[in-house]
Length: 386
Ligand code: ACO
Image (cartoon, rainbow, N blue to C red; front, top):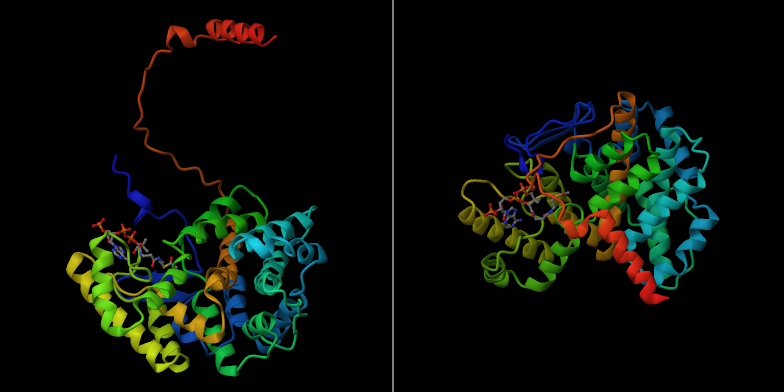
């Protein structure tokens, strides 16, 4: 039996949510090209599309925006929980634990999956912004129901109504990151949901998987790489040195795409509009040099920029600090995770694959380990302690 490492190419679920064409570099949400949706309809409309299967009418969009707006405020117990840990704990752990507390508060689990999904999506940015403000000794802000999802997140972080260009850029980022098939975190969410656990617990599991640098933990490393390279002229030597050590270049490569990640294409365009020309020049030089070096090192597979490379520029430009990059990714992906949880539960069967056993067999228990001997040893130990 051949076990595909990392389940590459294995189909483990059917979905009507997202189609990824890795050869053509195409990402489709319920029939619509995601790169066409970004910036043309608000993230809330994309959430409606993924959750309910079709684009909303104006009335349906207004209703959902109202529900999201009304759910942004955190229960007092979560605000109180965040006060001390915010000073010392990393932001993603705070987000994960706060989501867990939100689930714990709904102890009767009466909320429908849809209600819980709306509440989670509305509250995750508030958790991130509140923990950031507490860490920096700033007062907590009331959410602004008159602002869109992305604009309100920026407002709650900074206390200022954002520049509309920044709000639009972040809204597009949220749309592009809303869902992506069975990435590790979404797969984990579906596995957890298949046990009939609650939505919050499945999302906590998903956040754990997102955290790793091979998945959603990458953008902070992309940012640090750009800072460390500093000047475009240093890019090739820096990258060469890292590759010679066997390091991976963050923001490059993808399990599914064998060409440029389509989200990267759009984020690059957005970045060009909102970052400084110097920073954009540095990033595009690093992109060019890394692509060239990776092509030479791996002629058998195209290793191109993934979503994380230009995400780091866009998030930085709109005012999100690097230690909140992965939390912001999680806040955008809450829609995809919960849409997959809903889909899993519509036609559920417990996930329970098998592992190919390669360990030893037919070993015999040594005489010294047999129960009687162990019991005698325990008695002897008891006597010596008495
Ligand atoms: N830099 C250097 N080498 C790489 C990179 C990279 N970014 N990506 C893949 N490779 C190489 C590997 O070293 C490996 O080489 P080997 O066969 O000589 O050992 C080969 O390509 C295949 O690597 P796999 O890990 O098997 O490829 P996979 O398709 O599973 O990788 C992954 C996908 C994990 C994202 C990988 O490209 C990577 O580690 N990238 C850097 C981290 C990153 O940017 N993560 C964010 C991903 S996007 C997201 O999750 C939202």
